Image 1: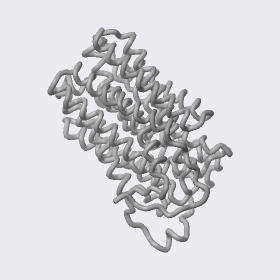
Image 2: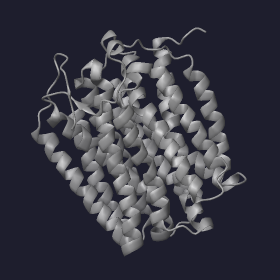
Image 3: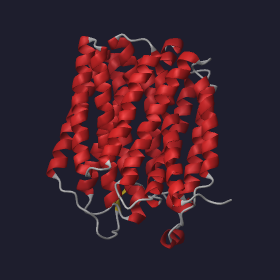
Length: 405
């Protein structure tokens, strides 16, 4: 069969990354229904959410370089297979244990598609703009979140079997995406890698780029931590604190926020990475202020403003952080460097989501919002400080990285 052109392959990979985020985010809009019908505590629902980034981190650490050996296309295809099985698990889930199993499968699936997909975007980049793949990567994530939230909300409200039907829709979409993946050209494994054979190499940072890595990881991680507050608790915040019970209204607000994340990532593609990071951190800081104020005043309008600012902050910070890595990473170690940033990002996401659930169960929902907001605000200010202090160092020649021990 004839492979896709470079430009078509670029957009095919972007679509696969979008679908990966759609599948992994789909359960979040349903969490309040699970909690209500199955009598689950917030600690359990956020624990289900946090299972996904924990598994994803393990995959990135252990298998972050696997696509260098078996190829980007094969890795994407294997990742989609795990996502397909996860969708089937959620579609037929009779109890909470199936939800944990589904999240584990999603963590494996996205762990395989995230790093290899980001590297494939760079290799299939149809433009001369080195920042373009990083922006598109962030846009795919934001658009995946948007589709998961708005379509999920519509199906929950109007389709039969709200706990299962949306996953059957996703099952069909993933199968179509797997067929599309077969037409993506396979990258060639470098001879140096062919001779050594595959082995887990952990996360690798090129020497002299630790400051760059810290800035990129904090930027993406803070954006993810802020996003996790809305992903894991957003629907329940709107219900329990603001007093809105209409799932479609909640889904619309959150989906608009994620769509604005795609818009800000597009704008970030025209800015320098450090400028994007600064804009993201300012937006994140304002987000947590608005969120705390909304919870104290029980204001749905302030919650909407917080969600919008959060979406903008996510897009700017993630695109800026990934952009630094894409521009500065040596080609032969790009996927490991990207994985190193994503490990921190998903660690922050998991800690933010699960920590919020535990604190909410122990001290109350309002106190959890306060604590999470203070932590995220601190991370935003720290990252903003580093973006102003540190000068971005460009890589002029390939170097041999040292693994994290």
